[in-house]
Image (cartoon, rainbow, N blue to C red):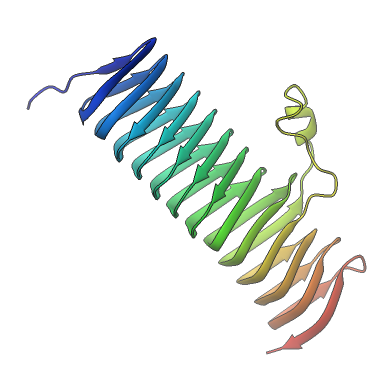
Length: 243
């Protein structure tokens, strides 16, 4: 088997695309063309004019990709901007991510912020950060601790749990101005639909599910439930229908 070469950019430099073992960006780099590699790391600033396919990607600096991303594992501790779609098996985001199209994945752990201009489809979502999904957020299970405002046009899944966050202020107080916990943060959506739904501090026009439990701080237009419904006295619901 032919041994793949490494691509390392230090200082201010540019390179063409290609097939590599490791791609390392330590300065201010630019890559023109598609990249296929085992490991892609960015600790500086990089602009990629092409698609990227990798086994693992780590972004600790700033990365701007004018194309799509296909990777097994994505770690973002800095900022990642992707104009195309992102497909990933496992993603851990503690920085900021902007996706110009759709996101597809198996597991997403969110402690920073993410904006998806298309649909977002993940099997497992564990979040204590902020998200904005302009399309449909489709999850197998979602466990959301609200510390900042979160929004999706529609949310669908099997298990949807939304609770008020706690304890994250002390964790993040050393970076004020970037992640300031919002005491009145809430989740907003037009429609939330699932099998088992537990909500706190959520605003939605319609909540539909087999089992629906509304904790404090919810403002719901209409609840449609099949088997079980509970409403906290600190929540407001305009109408309730048993299907």
